[in-house]
Image (cartoon, rainbow, N blue to C red):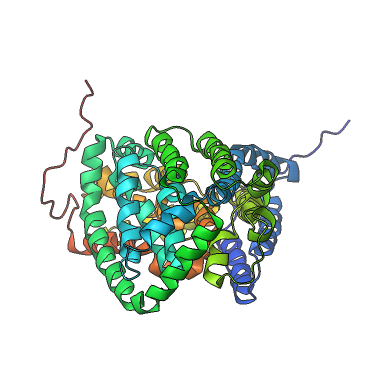
Length: 483
């Protein structure tokens, strides 16, 4: 009996590895220009990646086994995205979001809403260290207020994408800060201080830009007559008793207590339904319908849309798990694509060819950012994006007078922040679903998302913050012992 021949597995060559990325980018560009969903682009890229993988000696079952394992790992993300849709619908059904808008729209200027969206999400994100929790609470509120004021939503969406992720690099509560510290072999606060060389200037510049953009778009905001009209429409449909704000307070409390986001959002949604029944006299059945399909003025409240302003209708007719189903599906498709490329080591091949001879600070910084960005784009995993550059470039950094803090701080600009910039990454999909603004439309205004990488490159040229350059305050070179 002849034994079955097993084809030897090999890495793709450079052209094959790059083609796996270029096919995706080309397909995405076509979809964006045609104004259609990017899922077809992802499917085309998956088919091409499978062809390359099989050419490299993998059977279909061999390459798909890790894909199924990884997909099982993103089930929670899938459910969280659906839960966000339920939560938004419930907070409208309860009257929580409309009531918050009812009171704040009189005291918050349209010209200030953009910079406030950035600063408030930044502060909360630093305190709790959770980007998705910040976006799901403060982000939802600021987006709703901005929508009621007719402020350009792409700018606000970019500000919120930026602000919610400042804490990832600046908060001792953040998992990213702690993982980066572990990889750099220093304590968390030392790592945060090293990253502060580029995070602090980026925050300052972003704040100024958001202030300027807000002042420039303030004239497009709601007039006093429009504000009064929106308040009247809110009070017509919802009970504006301040007590209905309690469901949002409940969510803030659980989030600050670092409770898991999925049960937090689910429980808060049920509390929202209860409040909607008590205060707005909506039915329980319509509450369940809202959790699934979102709030509808005609279906849920039994009111005709005629006579209500478009701004008000856009504000309340939203939410529900089904409003986020497209975002949740993209997560699964993107995971399949990224896992295939990761398993065949396409990123390693590209890095070996492009960055084999880099030696200067800017070149090392750029190579680390590019590799981390590629890993993020392929896997939506900040952990892998933090780990792979260290494995590829750790010795190179040391040989050229840098240390692990320089390496880790460089890749951190991409590992967490690019998650908000790449349309098929889970975080970008989540934020786009939350705001209703496509990632690429918000990208020009996501100053912290791409600004950290730009600032890190500038400082690498100047040598500021680098071991081989100028450090203006002492940084521990090794991890301090924990008591």
